Picture 1: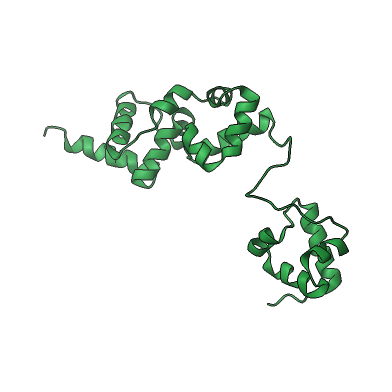
Picture 2 (picture 1 turned 90 degrees about the horizontal axis):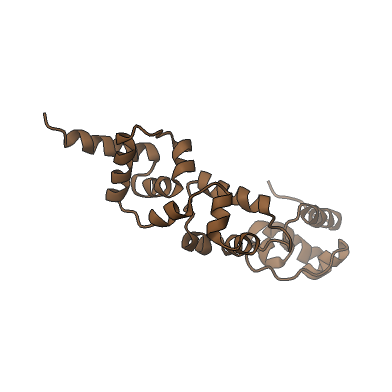
Length: 193
């Protein structure tokens, strides 16, 4: 269904985006809400004119998803690190720097180093560094070691104890459960009859 716009609806939509903290630059709207951008230009002759009609200043060009100054607090940093681990994303510095450089910068500012930020978030930075270079064979070897120790292999436990292993298992085997099953199959195949 096509949205019917008016000057008042454009102004209301702009103000709603502003209240929700969403970017108002034309580049962001081109990706997120091109219909609003087109309506604003149609009714007000330009996007800056539409913003002025809504009582807002001309936006500063946003490069990426920048956080406002003062956004990162110690609690938010710990929460974001733990959230990355829960999603199975790698926690080694080079991967985080590639994916979310502001997180590394803020963690270094608040904690002095990425390693210290990991420690405060409840992770062992040495284990994360050690497990950075995985292959299907190293994943299976580490899982076999966990099996031999009768360690807790539930995904939530592994996520907390060794997020890098979980991430690598998902990378090479699709899921944690498939990686464990494959390791067990290999171990059973190598057992003498």
